[in-house]
Length: 234
Image (cartoon, rainbow, N blue to C red; front, side, top):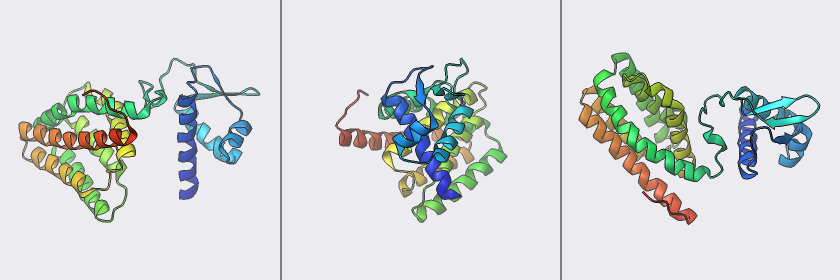
């Protein structure tokens, strides 16, 4: 079961990569199940599973007897209201999203320290405990890392911030994807530092800890950029 799910997720990402590389636009034809299965070297069943997920997200639409097309509906992709998954240069997107996080998340932490509830703090404590356990075992903890930042956005007391959660979520996910830093003890410790400041309800401390966390992440993104031979301003 897990293996099948992993394969479907892998094919889903390969389909998104195909869309980006070929600069497909809304209404462009992706192909039939058989054509895509042959192109990616997997069964039609695996392709069908990945397509169903992308159809549910409003990324693709299936036209009977014709094939699969990039959705031309005005409804934005589910979980991706700005269509960021379709941007061709995903590493540049990672860099730019991190710049947005640097602007937003220190202030989110500042506001959260003033407004967070004990129930929300309990959620963050549980996440930190589990992240530390997984990190000690060198196991992936990306979902927890993402949810930590999402919980902060939900805790800040600003009614607009939850609308930006898909952007923050994608920023964290892409950072982890390109830097592979999700299991490092250093990153785990910085989440605990943020939590400690939130528990003290000290806004400036929480802001400073988040800024330190993101500055550390900036170094990792820059190292990956140098490895790739690209340099961005900022």
